[in-house]
Amino acid sequence: MEPMTTDVAPLNPETHSLPLALIAGCAAAAVGAARWAAVTVVTGLKIGWVAVGIGFLVGYAVRVFGKGSEPAFQALGAVLSLLGCLAGNLLMVCVFVSRQENIPLLTILTHLHPSIILNLMVETFSPMDLLFYGIAVYEGYRFSRAPVPRAVSVPGLNV
Image 1 (tube, rainbow, N blue to C red):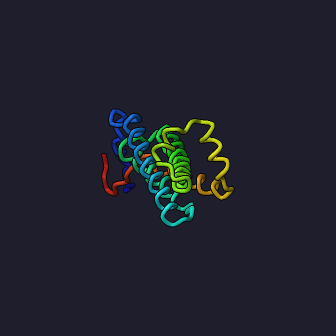
Image 2: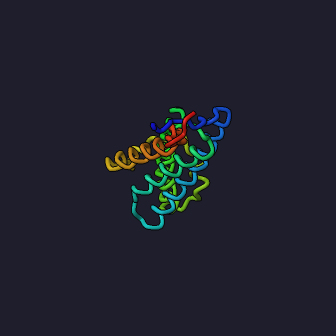
Image 3: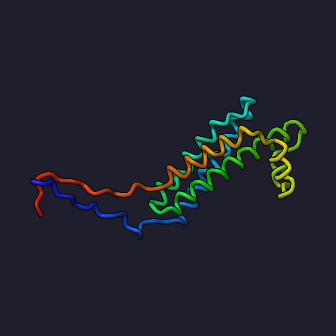
């Protein structure tokens, strides 16, 4: 007697929500960025492994709230993980500038524009950042996809 293979019902595409995944992923990236900045400010060390946490956090948020198994969800998780890491680095630099120059953080944040952001990111860049950004992007990509149901083999079932 051969075991019969039955298909599990696929995820319902109507329950997938890329907009909800985007909102949840952005929120997770913001929380991750703030935590990375806080850890760096408190310890005085730029701990790159926090980037891995950002990737996981973003990927998990995209998976749970988006419920999608398409590659678009994975791409979204990867991009938002990278943006979360970049935002964390920028926020950390802004906090250090705020403390050093005795300027309120909110004043610094409200006066940022693209050229200043680019200069700050270039000046504080380390080649090691690429490694941790890459890992975060991978984690965001990997954890963003909802699992796809597989066929289940049921021994003795003849249908």
